[in-house]
Image (cartoon, rainbow, N blue to C red):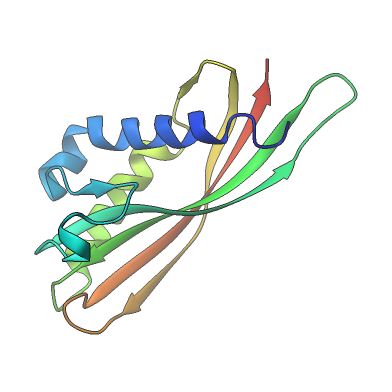
Length: 139
């Protein structure tokens, strides 16, 4: 049962990100949980991708659930980190302590775990990789 809510959680995270007006003001509709359109051509400016996920069981004597550690990355073609960091802050504001609805269960908590800002090679000059931890309970 540890993967039972993985798809629902991913859909809820994606839905929360695309629905946020502050994030939309920074990246428009450039939020992806699938391969980039156009064969992987990078959009100019900043964009967001949902990344890898690690799931571990989190069962108790009375309930069944899982801990989902998942990545969200901010990519930027800018030469500095300022724009990417603004987007990363907006992503974090959307997700931390979010009240996401899951049809098959409940989100117990959603927390920020860590981030890493990295320089890249053109056209992606900057990347911020963020890890979040969601604890979910099956219903």
